Length: 275
Image (cartoon, rainbow, N blue to C red):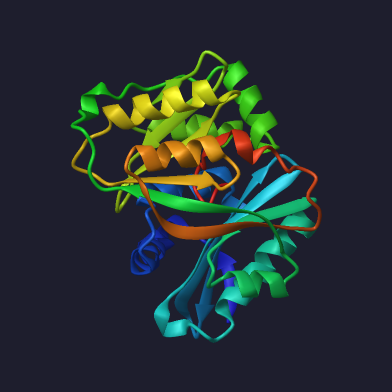
């Protein structure tokens, strides 16, 4: 087995293994990983054949995220996923000096992460809406995130992720801004529209943004909405709007939890691979 940097030439394989797993990212998301952290995107090869992927995204020196840990079915149960994780952790600790490493774990992956020392922080669920009142894609408007919005996100998320947020806002379908500095974004995905990231200072602002964005979304697509269990107002709103929980994840941390953030004010994740 050999682990090397993921390159643009590898994105065909990366997106195929993503499709096999049934995940929602698009090829543009793989390019976003490369743009944000070109030295932190990895490909595992077994006997010269591509076998799996892993990405990291660094938020300053305080926090980094591990995502897109995917292994092709032909190479599973051969230690590929473990090797990729260990390589990513080594890169973050030794090359980048990151103090806290986090990820969002599926139930299938959680035992492996626990063996590597990750600890559970809190739970979240993916909610899905299959039918909604008619909306029009043209009604979605792009947003320009202000300094106040980025500062609020830093406070709520626990670290500065402004490069990621600017990228998502520039390339997404549109969003909503709240009077309290909050924001909510929406973008396209392989299987469904993705609602997030979204943060708000108070419940009224958060609910207003999410309802407005969902109302304006195209009605012929599913919407995926990843919500921390600790945001009771967002969970309640999702149920009232006809969303149903379809996936359970666990946020986990390694090395120290110096950047806990406030999940009660996170109205939607950016993506399990980004946090």
